[in-house]
Image 1 (tube, rainbow, N blue to C red):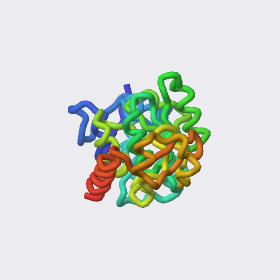
Image 2 (image 1 turned 180 degrees about the vertical axis):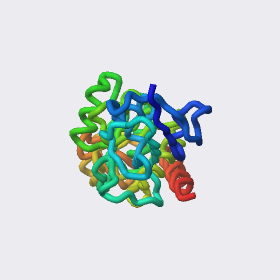
Image 3 (image 1 turned 30 degrees about the horizontal axis):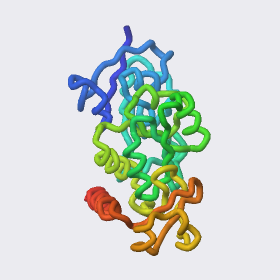
Image 4 (image 1 turned 30 degrees about the vertical axis):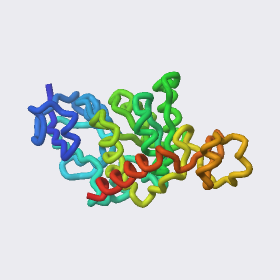
Length: 251
């Protein structure tokens, strides 16, 4: 069977078995009949992880049909490398970035909302096919640990999380999409993602517990679900998490 040479760089090697990492290797191809996207994903790497592909040093796109003897090099996004429009595999996203998370990432969704980032979270009743459609229709970045979900053809923007630790997931997303300039803590509802606005205490007094009425004066309310927020006992812990996240992401 004909073969082509493949070489994957940086954290794309996370998806490969040790024997194929950090090296060029031969991979079987059906000469001129398989797209480079198909072959990359057959190795377990979602197309959403790929930013630049070269064949013999020339920029190619996902539709390129791999030929026997081709030397294919594949790169993830690099913050220090600006890929020209001619070399982009997908249209560039313009800030602010918007996300949709699958049903295993509830804690990460709360963390992203805490930082003011537009984040939809799918509960257990939303099937993968609908997640992919929402991501496509609203140009949202799909975050998941499910490679199969990220390999769906209508998913344009996505990121495969490598860890189950929610805080480390948050740092990875901040780094991957360079989000520090977009962070605006305490501006989104942790429950539904709606925007928070200041609200006069007198207009919500009837909804407050007696001690809350007594000890707090400043309140915010979600424009969508009407959840009320104030700097209660939970505030110092969450503020410390925000500061830790921003400090870690700046390192």
